[in-house]
Length: 329
Image (tube, rainbow, N blue to C red; front, side):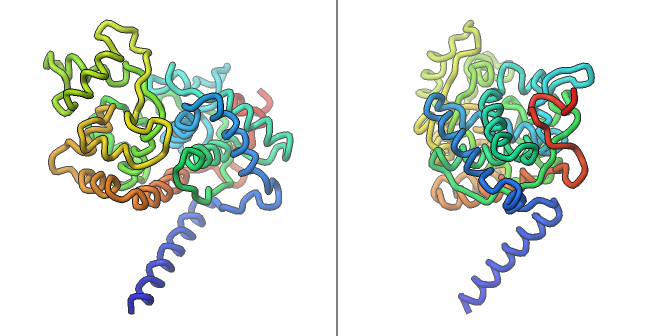
């Protein structure tokens, strides 16, 4: 009986994944004939970049995240300003914040040298995100591929659609819901903050005058508050960096969730997952904190879910030869 139930569950998950893949017109084997080494090419460039820049993995997955939340996963975030384009790089959530474009260019060059005009920049970002996580100790997953690149950007959409570190849980949940992601996706994807850094200006509001109270955010542990105030003095530039995960800042693991339980989440949007009384997110945080395997499995599935947000496929869009600009511009 148990084996029958298990078989049914496995079959259901398999069918669900097939439906997701079919509906989005994406496939894990999209480049099997046209560029069979695409995944390994991307992984090699990311691996080399990590040797000199421990932050780059987190930066690359953030590019994918910020891309998908604006008009879907179409590499619009990579476009520079032009006569016809207002770059998403200049939107408030991205300006002086997103990084890793040099590594994206290196990946694109390597792909073009191997199979010119085949692999889209949107797929490049999805593959780089998976490599970044796995090379940092996190899970691996079959990245669904076949996206094409946008011909334009949406700076206004980037200003309104990307979740902010200053927002409350209700607003962030709404932004996830707007792109078809649920509460489990929200908590799992927030777990990407288990590596990487954030500038003081992303959280300094919590250190001195939270919500205009004149006091620090009460959900910050006192010892962590002292540490952060030393890193980010009240009249500092705001550009100093703090680890998103104070315990294992360069490893992809589940310690982010334990940090939340200890009131040591760096961003307001992080800590509210656990500190919002009665929120559905609290039990998910507790589960992921005690069960890294559950977190890894959920994270992999949520990355697939996010990668399926409104991709351009078929004859829509194009395959950019340079990720920074539309072909022919």
